[in-house]
Length: 454
Ligand code: HEM
Image (tube, rainbow, N blue to C red; front, side):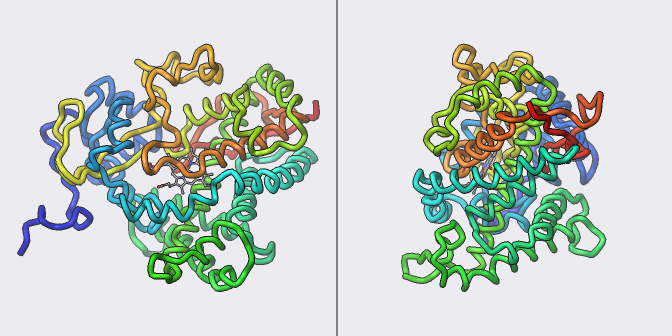
C-alpha cells in the first residue's frame, strides 16, 4: 500500500493538525461557523486583534489557516509557486454545488475550460450585451416606478436572472420558468450553508441538491437544441465547441459550467446592487450628485463608454463591494508544505482569506466601516496602497471572468434609476437595517424601497 503522501493531492485527506499555530477552534463540529454567519467582521476582527495576521480557526467544518494581510492574499491568489488548489479549497464546502464549474478546476484543466468561456467576455460580445441589457433595464425600472413600493432585492434578482438568460443562455420565455429556476438557485446556495449535510428530505442540504439536480437537468435537456441552433450565446458556444480530438465536450461538463456561470452572474450582482441601493437611499445628497453626473451621459451607452467610466457611480460600485464583497471569503488548500508570514503551513491544509475583512483591515483603511465612495477618487485612491487590499474580484488565474460585465450591469441599471428617480426607503427609520451576511449580503427583509420621480 502507498503512503498517503504518495497519492495525488486530490485524493489526500485534509491536514487537521495546526497545533503549532496560535488561534482557536470553538465548538466541536461547528467551530466558529455560526459566529461567522452572524457577524463575520466581529469574528475576523477578534482573530486579527488576538492572534495577528496568521492564525488557526475552524469554520465550515474545516480546520483552516486564516490569513489577514494583503501580502498573504496576494501570495495565495497569485499562487506563483503553485502551492494552492482552488478545487480542493471550494470542494470542502461547495463540492456538490459548484461541481464542474471553473472554480472547481485547477491549473491546466482550468486554463483550457476558461479559454472556451473567455471569448464571451471580449468587446464584440460585450457591445451586444450592452444593447440588450439597456432595453430590459429601461422597461423594468419603469415598472418599479409605477408601484407604491418594491422589494428591491427580489426585483433586482429577477431582473438580473432574466438578463443572464438573455445574454448567456437565450431560451424562449416559455422555456425559462424563471420563478422555478430562481428558487432552485436560492435553494442551492442555502443548501450549501446547511450544517447537517444529509441528502435526506427535510434538510436544507437536500433541498439545495434537489435545486442543483433540477438546474443541471434543465441545461442538459437543451443541449441538442442549442447545438442545432444559430444562437451565439455562451451556452450555444459551449455546446458547439469541440475538444482537441474533435469531439463535443461532455453534456455533463457543459451543464455544470452553465449552472455555475448563471449562479456567479446573477447572485453576485444582485447582492452588490441591493447593497448599493441600500446605501444610496441613506444619502440623498450623493444621489443628487450622481443624477447630475449620469444626466450628462449619452442616451445610448456603448460598452466603451461604460468601460472607461471612472466617476461617481463607479466609485459607489467599488465602495459597495469593498464593504459587502459578494464573494466574502476565498478558500484554497495547500498542495505542498509552504510558509506564510514565518509560519509553516503543512501540505493539504485548508487556507481561508476573508476578502470581507481584508477590505476593512484597520491598518489599511481609514474608518473602514464607513460607506465612503470618495476613498476611490483619484485624489484619495486609498485602495492603491497595496494591489491586494481591495480584492472583490479575486486575483490571479481565477480572477472573476465576469467583472467587466458586472460593472457594466451596475452602471446601466443605476444610470437608468438615478437619471429619473430618487431611491427612498419605503419604511421610516429604516437605516441601519438588519443584514444577512451569507451566502450573499442583503437586508433580511429584502430592502423595501420606492422610486420617486425627480
Ligand atoms: C459584483 C459582481 C461579482 C463579483 C464581486 C465577483 C467575484 C468573483 C470572485 C472573487 C471570483 C474568484 C473566486 C476565487 O478566486 O475563489 C469570481 C470568479 C468567477 N466569476 Fe465572478 N463576480 C461577480 C460577477 C460575475 C459575473 C457577472 C459573472 C458572469 C458573467 C461571473 C463569473 C465568474 C466565473 C465564471 C468565475 C470563475 C473564474 C475562474 O475560476 O476562472 N462573476 N468572481
